[in-house]
Figure 1 (cartoon, helix red, strand yellow):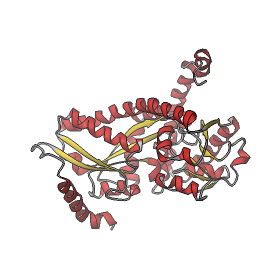
Figure 2 (cartoon, helix red, strand yellow; figure 1 turned 180 degrees about the horizontal axis):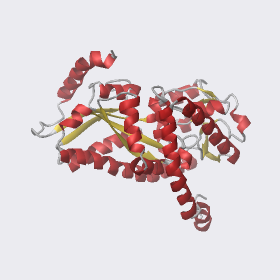
Figure 3 (spheres, helix red, strand yellow; figure 1 turned 90 degrees about the vertical axis):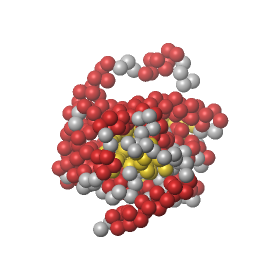
Length: 369
């Protein structure tokens, strides 16, 4: 029996008591609902703030009938335990991402930051909505991981993630040999395949680990989140682009018991608020990350270095080796890959043929100079 199943009622009582102690929330109408939500991220992190924004949208769209009280990682349970906490009824809902569930089953990264045969996260969301990915993710959570008291949603696709922060630019694949590098999820296997000595630490510990020499290089998320975390204070070489994590799709989990209590109109509001926040998150990311990158270059002494093509090719070769290895060992993993490949064969090929190349616009208008 898990910690949460044995201690869940007591912990829920503590949570309820804490809510009463602050006394901030007004009494809800009889047909109204209030959920306790915890994410797996720090309070100032964009990955946490997307769930704060989701809560605002749901409250506004429902006229206050459904209120989500969102707390950061560690508020009630350890950050990596939020999925267990929802399933065991300790909290009502949670936010996280599939890279955190790789330790339970490696397919988690396929729904988060794996390269998806060249699909960035916004395309991966297209596969999830219209190519069978959403159904496979539900199967992953409820059947493969056996979290049967959980209703899962996919939310908030992010821009491609930079390769990371280094003491000096990576000029060749040989430079990665023995490199003490931080990354989560299946990218751990990828970097090890490329010869790195990978050390996985939570986001909040990345900067101290760099300062103490536990790691010499790291990736986290994107320009704004990296700046808030303090990475420009300890490293000045910021490398991009990268296939290590071509983007990120997050997860929103709701207790099935809480979900089943909702009337149909509130279920629809949650469903479509998730879609609205997914679009809004991507738009905000374009705005905020571009500003943060400019600030780091102009005010913080950061040098943006372009990742060599041979290194990115090596990343994809390493990804292929890792994915093939897991697919050979697990039928479900193989079925997710097959579904992604079928969708990408159409979607990636379409985008390559229909989208004009960005370098022409950059040269014509002088952007990025």
